[in-house]
Length: 487
Image (tube, rainbow, N blue to C red):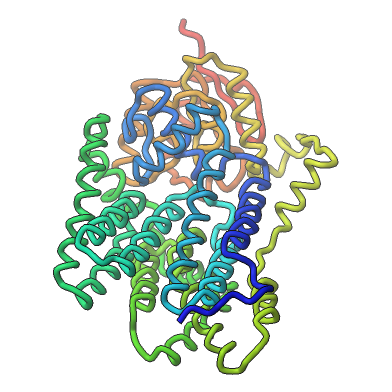
């Protein structure tokens, strides 16, 4: 039964407007006002695609979907190198998801539950531990389309609507493979509800995937490269998932046992006690958590995948407690805002810098001890490279230098413009640098380079610069080498 809105209660769109403003503030007022490491990789690949006609995996490799490269390629096409457009677009996508969390919860348990769910979800998305400022990542779009699919599943009254539900879920999978766990939750519930719907839903999923693969093929993207670089090579020695158990446990405990995620646990327990059944939301939560554990990196943005069911289940529990103990809705709502409100010290500090003016201080760079440059410094280094090379010069940044490469607006001599340490990546990197030596090579001086990049890769670069390059100087704690003139 839907509860009538009391006069004090805000409307859903009013809450959404406040959350949208908060999202923009958290996403845009970040340190350096620059592309993050991952965003820089996607921007570089997307720019090569849209500006230089170099399709993904030929114009740069990262283990992401071509869809995210297209977003960043469009961003570069419209506005050049920038960080604000993909984040603003991510905020819009995330806000649509927040609104549909309201619609899902309101349909199940009334409007008040919907308002509680959207408030909890919207605020938790802004936490540092859930990657609040990284709204442009693939998880944002994955969760948008999974949430839309869940809503369509709950409201579907015909085979056509269930097919559309599958189409939405397929797009989620195309953005990020872990969308398969949300799809599996819907598929299992389809079987519980109507087995014919399960087949129709699955057909919709496959239709989306096949259609997007065909579009990629028409665009010139190799399916073999997509499978190799986007999936298979990410589970080999030296890949992003290749970490010891101790490292994984540390990351897991930091995210799930020593963070604000603890706020959800008593509410989820209360949900199970109240509902006394394992329903769609419980299944969604269990499978999404399983997906995070199977990937095993436990990155902050991965937590976005469990937030929708957590928020809905928590809102149901809170609404039940309000009903049972006849507590003030205003008081409970205020407590939720206070408890779930994100930390914004980084954003406030950056706002202050913008208001009072802030000049970059370079004095601490290129002196011992060498420190790793922050995002703003890497952006400035990219601009320095751009200003000191010609447009046709190729530049290689050793180590994890995607931000420098993106802001330099120069091509790398290799598709592995950012350190990837699998056997396939190393072989291709060595071959590319041997056959096509770049005009400029930048080598980090800070110790993190030695700690994170394998010795064989570092030794190869060292031997290359020793033989064919001369030291030009130091910029932003990078040694800058230029190719020696031909004799």
